[in-house]
Length: 391
Image 1: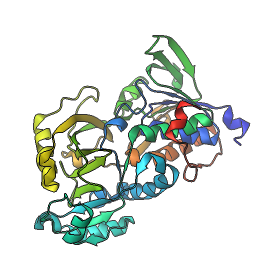
Image 2: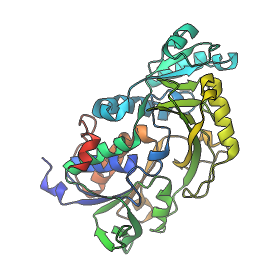
Image 3: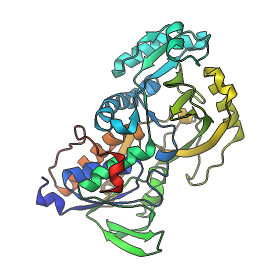
Image 4: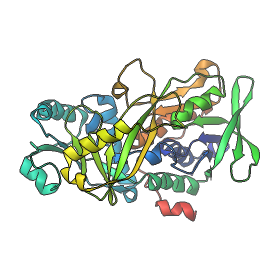
């Protein structure tokens, strides 16, 4: 049972995407009083509009090995604590050309370095597993990718957090950070159903607003180095693969097909925008995804798009021209270093590493509030997403 000293500390978490809900769960499990506020529905931002890939780490093993190792470690943890929210179906990195196959040794060595199991399959073995993959493929690596349901993912964390005393308020917009001098002491929010405005005081506020984190930090006069980076995805009618199908090589546009229930999601592209709210979908991105997705799985030519969507990744700004070179790692900011007490921001990362991001954030919260409460989220099995509706 949590010590009374921990329970007397109240933390507000801004954002109910994968990062915010994981932070809420971690803090509630350590015994904090937790309030989650989200301006929209749960998982309605970046988390709810990605391609739902549970990363093995293989996608980034050559380009971003630190992020790849984080993904590999968290893949194992998430499989054990929330299998009900995932399809643990594996993935293939397929060579379609000699240019792709030229990456074979480099990819294999990178996977070994990152601790990712990746046996090589012959073309015949590939087609035995995935008959719709291009028949002239030159072989593939098999990796422990998976697919998650974004809403079930978030609801599982929140159901467990609520079981441990957390309060969750969707459709509750943060209008202002409550400040006394240089310290943040809570949030002023609007209930978007009732238009009621109220103050929620807290010992500490965690900004987990994803690509909108910069707007929250600006309320305290802070400049957060965000680089909102959208990607287009196309949802095709019909499930044309049982596993995640990647093109072997460096991460690039249009190099993945993710099965999601009875659909196939073609992904993705990458570019920078100044704001994350309104993002036009470039027609040429859609055309590219269709062309490259059908190159991986020719049978997709029989299907039509049933949905096209985009969302901004909450990446940290780096001085590079190609957004594919921006790290998929995460960073936790203690704004006391900039003269603002009581505010912590967590950005970057991805859904697959949200539990680890939350652990880092909660460790910082404990340090700032002088609390000794160890993380227990690695071994705590999450409630079913269904429990959110009756706890």
